[in-house]
Image (tube, rainbow over all chains, first blue to last red; front, side):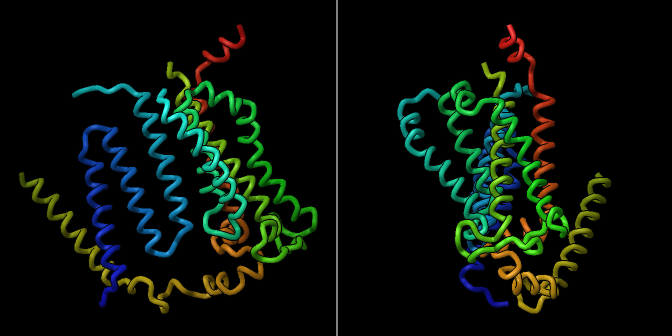
Length: 83
Length: 141
Length: 98
């Protein structure tokens, strides 16, 4: 298989996705995990743009921010308990 | 969130964000985007407004009655648009079969029922997001 | 300890099977993949003529698959309804009623 330049960008960005989703699992502080989720959706927008799907890029940008805001509100409404 | 700079910047930017959301809704059949993304952008502009200026001012902009009506009638609007096909004697939600003039491709009000259905879906998604946000933020006192 | 080793072995075998299955897939984005059958051909060729919308995604979502989108909006309605039912407090109503 021969790669072109866009493929290397895709591989780099997708490895960022893997690292971000593993980080979301291992981070204990919920606010930090939600911030990492925002970064995840931002990287996902760039990947959709590289794959020539601006439709999904716009939807991912809007929906990613909206889910982040909703999760923030839910985290602020709940109480934190140390184990 | 009572910062002076934040309030001024939000007052400058948020109207354009709302107008851009309606642009994405109305041009859903011409340019990339669509009614779901546009509706979420419109909802996000109101969510940002009520985060920065306080939930009471946000509620003053969009009262509960307006949210209830748009929430309930978005789906009904979809059904009404589908019934156009039934009245013309063709299947439910038919567009070209119902004999509607499709117009010139690329114009704003072309493609028959698609633009009207998209407007309903966009307003409906926006009101859903704002309703969920207001309900979650309610007891913040 | 032996249990953990067994779990690790099971996970490795499952991962090997999945990777074998992925290696059998046709390469991504090729034009002669079995995904590109007569259905997508029909959409690509006739979408503009059938619906008059330049954006093909919108013409599929709001015209060819309009039932799907209709019940998707009902799913959104149900989500908002569930949030309102569980979290809405009667405090505001009492305050405005007094």
